[in-house]
Length: 89
Image 1: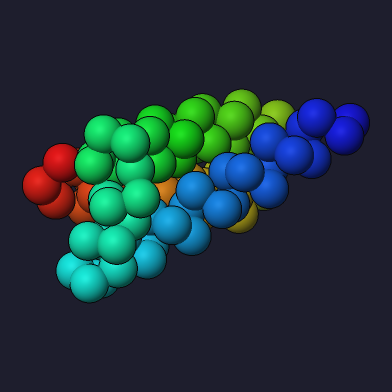
Image 2: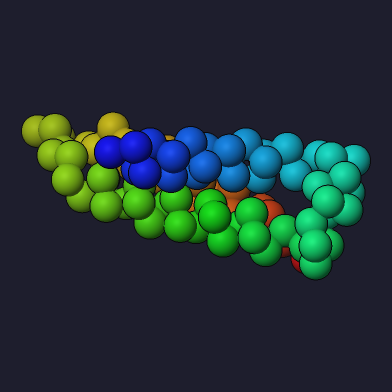
């Protein structure tokens, strides 16, 4: 349980850094702190978090209209990854 809690915290931290990276000035600072001067580790962490989130999405039953309340978050995370991948790595 403790390990999964750490993974969730790390996932959300990666998402937060991803959103911060959309600001050009913060992007520059984040890339400077990375060993390879790239966002790839952050994007990879977010993708892994999305994978875990999709697993949870599959476990949560959709309501009578077929709507899963968690699906919107997964879509927003995927949109964030798309935006980050569009930035210069």
